[in-house]
Picture 1 (cartoon, protein in one colour):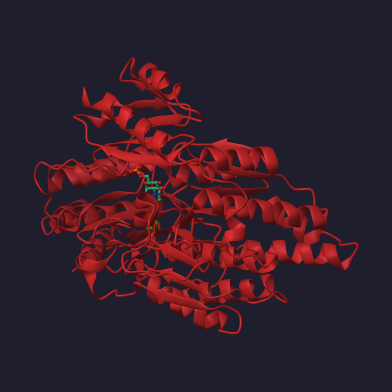
Picture 2 (cartoon, rainbow, N blue to C red; picture 1 turned 90 degrees about the vertical axis):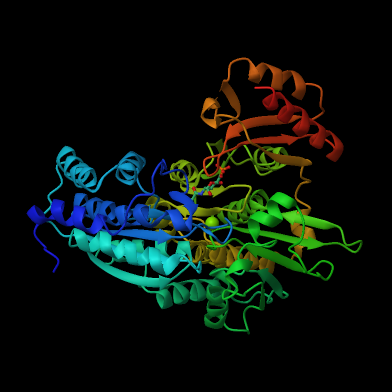
Length: 540
Ligand code: 16G
Ligand code: MG
């Protein structure tokens, strides 16, 4: 029997918590991607996230909070959990601390006390309603973690809906739909079907009268994106789009992200295993929860060309800038990148397209918030996570614009449909796939024409295991090290020796290592610079 009145919850939390014992000696941290580690270690964490999600909802007068269980591009045995705020955004940063505190409470009683302490400190009315929705990806550890989550929600009498298996961006979409349902600007139908319908309709409008793009082959990383993309393509219809999904073995759980998927292709800078591409045809890879996408193709000499998040941002920026110019609507477009953006992309965006570029630290929440400062904010990480945000005032300006001629009207209609096509909550591989396809069909471009905008500087990313990654502190959007003292000066001295050289070091937010990024005018030099900077870390 579960008690629904707050005075019973401390004992109820403690009681349920005995079913989800905390593994000894483990320190959990809610990081850039929520909690993420071996699925077998996550049971207590997910139970406690259930408690926190309910508390967050009560703090926000019963607005619906999302909980996504996924470890994205990580190996199949990992899993993770993260919270989604009411507008479909990442959890507010100040709550990450509470998440970490809950996860690390030593005993069942301490956990119950933490719960009361946070509720009191934030003056949360525990008698109020709590609403939570959740979903998971295709990992084998998912169902058991969902059971733990439900226990957490039941312990504090939260109402919940299980959306079963979804991509991460689909759950973000649903959270926003639920919380905007009764407002003047409802985001959409809060169902998986509603998501497909919204994107399919928008895609059909954006591409109306344009030639259908040639087939795109999509590597779904053997993850949740595979079946969902097929479903989306069915809603759009084969008259409008031709998508060939490969690496779609979601039942072969050990194949998830294995030598395929967006992270593999981006970091290895090569094709997924076993893919034999036809020259100049477009290919794409999703990650394990379908919030990242990268594109690529091979030329007549079978040379591999990557079209990553920077290339997507550039294509989208060019397209939107041109539409705005045709429409005559006066809106400010801005780009947000991280230090990982290829130097050539930033130069192209600033010097050729003449759009302002902001650089933020790594992690979606940073980019997202910076993009919200523009009328139309385009943010992409080089790894393929990104989206385009249309501000409320931009939407009003577009909706109320009185076109003087059919050209202007067309441009405004396309811009408005883009706002519906592009997931406004978070980077979404499926939505981004449609966005890129639509732009290529407008331009009648293949991947080669798209790639011509600028040439990437050769670059190398190296993962270095160090004694204490927390010793690495950065400034200037992670582009410079403040600590360990003296290291930045050594990096600067090395970089100076290379033409178009650039390098930076930062601690990973998702694994116990630091990352070294280097780019330079030639492949050889980029590799050499990366090795030399990495060597500096080894002597620490
Ligand atoms: C997480 C971030 C991603 C970032 C990556 C960096 C979210 C939702 N995801 O996956 O944006 O690029 O971490 O990983 O914020 P790193 O800190 O290990 O380099
Ligand atoms: Mg992901």
